[in-house]
Each structure stands twice: as C-alpha cells, then as structure tokens.
Image 1 (cartoon, rainbow, N blue to C red):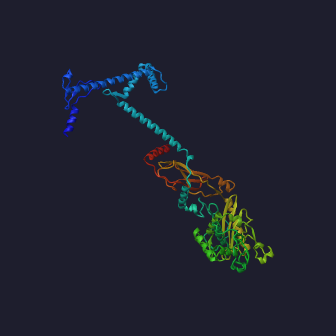
Image 2: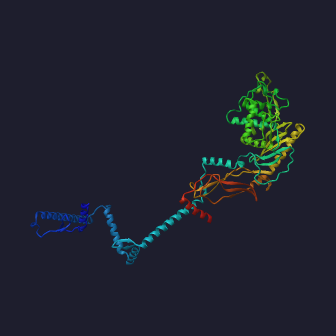
Length: 590
C-alpha cells in the first residue's frame, strides 16, 4: 500500500508536460526538478546521460517537424497537379470551394439572422457549443408535433379502411363447421324441427275438412298452416309402407343394398298365403323380382306381400325389421309412432297426423327422387313374363295384374305427385298427399276419413285433399331469404379487422296473400330490414347475437332472425384497445 501511495503522490506532484516543448529540466525518482547546468560536460557521468536523453528528444521533435513539412508539401503538390476528377479529394475540394462562394454572396442580414437562430439553439459555455433551453424546447416540440401528425395520418388511413366492408374475409370451412354446430344447439327448434308454427301471428282458417284428423304444412319451411285434431293417435294403415321405403332408401344410400338386387321370396310372402282382403302385388313361388320392382309395388299397389318381402331381405325377418322401424322413429323423435308389423294391416300400428306429416316432410326432402320414380307412377303391371318362373314363361305377360295408383288425386288435381293412401276399418280412410306448383310444395295428412265403402272413402279423400291444397296455393307463397352476411368493423379485437354477422337460420317463410293478385305477388313484396351495430368492441364470441334481420310485408313483421358472430376473437392488448377506443368515438360521431 505504501508503494502505491508513493507512486500516485509522485504522479500528482509531477507538473504537466507541455506538448512540443523542449524541456530543460528532468525529474528525479522523488519528483524533484533537476536543473541542467550551462556546461553539461562539467558534470558527472550521470548528468551526461541526461543530456543524451534530451538530445534524443530534440531529434524526435525535429523529425516530427520535417514530416509535417513534407505532408504540407505533398498537399500543395496535390492542389497544383492534375489528378483524375473522380478522386474523392477533388469532390471534397469542390464542395468546399462552392461553399466559400455561396458564403461570399450571402447578405449580411441573412448572416445575422443565421447567427440569431444559432444563438436560439446554442449558447457558449466555456468556449463550448451547448444546446440552449429554447433550442431543446423547440426540438422536443417539433418531434412531438411530427409524431402526432404521423399518428393522425395513420389513424385516418386505418379508420378509412374500416369502411371498406367488401374486403371482409369469408370464414373458413373449420370456422363454419363450428358455427353450425353451435347454432344447431342454440336454435334447435328453428333449425332442426321437422314442424314449426308460423313465425307471425295468424288466425285458424275455417276449412270444410271432413276427416277427423288433419294437418297441412309448407314442405320447405315445415310451418304448419292448418291443423285439426292433429295429435289424435290413429292407425296409419298402409301409410306404414312409407316407413318401409324410407329404410330401404337408407340402406341403398349406405351401399348395403341396390335397386337391381334380386330379392328372394320366402313362402310366407306369397300372395296366396296372405289375407284375401289385403292389398297385394301378387308375388308368387319361383318369381324373380328386383328391389326396384318391390318399391314400385309398395308405392303404387300398396302390396302387403311386397312389404314382407322387403322385411325379410333387409333384416332377415319381419320382427327384426319392425325393431329397425321403431328404432328409427325413436331416433327421429316420433314419440307417438309405433309399429308391430311392416305392412300396416294390423290396427296396433299407431301414429298421429302431426308426426306423419313431419316424417313425410323428412322423407320427401331426404329422398326427393322417390316422388318421380315411385309415388307419381299411375299404374303397375305384375308379374310380367320376366318375373315368372321357368314353368310359367310360356304364359308371357298374360298373368300380369294391372293396378292403378291408390292415390285418387294423382292426375286429377293440379300438381299432385304423391304420396300414399291407407285404409283399415279401425283407421278409416287415410291420405298422405303432396303437390307442387311453380316451385311451391305443400304436404297434407288426413286421417280417420269417413265413408261406407271405398267409393265414399275416396270421395272424402278427394274432397279434403282438394280443399287443403287449393287453399294453401291461393293463400301462401314462400319467400326464400338469401344467406346474406353483414360485415362490421372489429375494434380492439385480435385477428381480422372485420366481423361477419350471419343469420342464425335461413329457412323460407310462407308469406300470406295480403297484397297483389296472387300469393306470389305478396312474396315478391317482402322487404328486408337489417339492424346491425356499427362495430363490435373487444372480445367476440362465436354464435352470439349482435343484431337482427326483419322480414316485413308492409308494416307486418313476418319473421325476425338473429344476426350472430361467425367467429371468435380475443380482446386486444393495451395499445390495440387505445386505438379501438379512438375509433369507437369516431364511429359514434358518425
């Protein structure tokens, strides 16, 4: 420690050495000045060494001076001799010369102004240029104004882009799948129910329907237009065969059966082994029949033998097939529909007009080809020569029995193209009917129709079916909403700048005939009113309602459909919420 203390003490006491000076003194180890005498040769050898050191220092300074002079001479030579113009030194020299010329012509007043401006920004402090307080304030203010200006321009451009809703992104397939799943759960009644009431208030029509139970619905929307004792439990009779055909179509759709399949005919399904009052297709021993022919026999001739043959082919036995029928009814939510055998001959089969209408709508919408291929066929001839066993081939088509479609309105009422009749004494005269005109389809179910004999029973079917269908076509026409989405700005939300609001459902609306000459004129007069917020702020929840669409006929609101968010998004961070709040205030002003 004493050594370090002595070292720093010597350093402190040692005087500063002046640059380029020629010192005539030296310092001893204690930092004391040692003067050099006029004649250094008279001193001792130690002093002579000191003189030699001084001479070396002087020679060093002399060499430095000569180098400096040489450098100045080279610079002078550079200034006087020509060198290539692109040499950087020329450029620097020309810039300096140009600056001198400009400075030489600057008026004195401008120089004074420049000096005053410089004094505003700078001040001298001990011969140093230091930024003045005024200069600092000015610089800070200028930077602040620049930042505010840039922020304002950026904000204006961003908010302007939010007005371009046509740039909104369509939702992806994954987002749409999630949305549909949520909407099915949230709006199950409106989206998944087979039947629903009219979405607007209405009074019950007074129609002359003679059947004990009846219902009329719009096939596309499922809206019930008229009903009479629609929940009474009644045997469906041969309308049961619609359920048989539905299961066959499901098997064909799944690839487990085909229209061209040859169906074996067990002895029990032969026509000769069934009750004589049964509706029959006239299946017999040894015949060759396809699944397609059996379906035609079910729909046109209403053959009980055909129903049993299908039951054996699909499930192995009528009992197993009935279990399949009942399981399907349970899955579809038909709680009052139950079967004990597949042909409809037994009075213990039961259903209601309402559930039969719901099933008929599902059947037609899922398998629309069944109407043209089977239910609209006016007659069937069976068995033809191709169906006969080998020992009857010589008879040709002479054994064929021609039967007309049991639907008495097929071909007799405009637009009727299906679907099925049914009769046993316990059920009366039943009719499931559908008709289509100008793209508009209705379905009616009449059950427990009166009549002493088939002639009076068919007359009841014709009367009731005609009354219901003519009233429906003259009183209603469907308005089909477009699946329109509404794009609005999404503020303070992560992700996209826009949110698409979509209708919770887009089912058609049966428009009542209130204006124009026809019901179609009323449907064409429907107006759409969209009530949507100017923006959404913060977190977004998929499926949540943010607006609504109203479909109106004049001042009458036919239906109000929620507008829901098509996707989810989390709230933005602090910076995003700041800009979102500013944009929100601007939207409020507008």
